[in-house]
Length: 59
Image (spheres, rainbow, N blue to C red):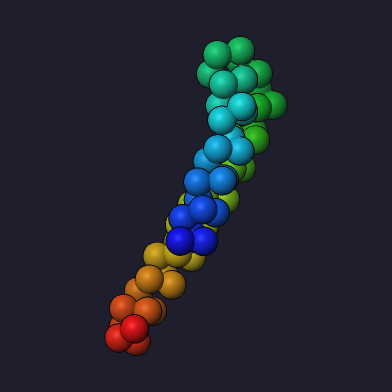
């Protein structure tokens, strides 16, 4: 469940920047949102590979 916590924490850390970008039109916040979403994508790919490896190893 530690990996799930990482995903949740990352998403929650972006909440303020999402608000600033969408509601207050802060362009710098948009850059932080894009970076955070890229980090989320990378994390998701890592987790997916980890799950696939565990499944194939029969654990």
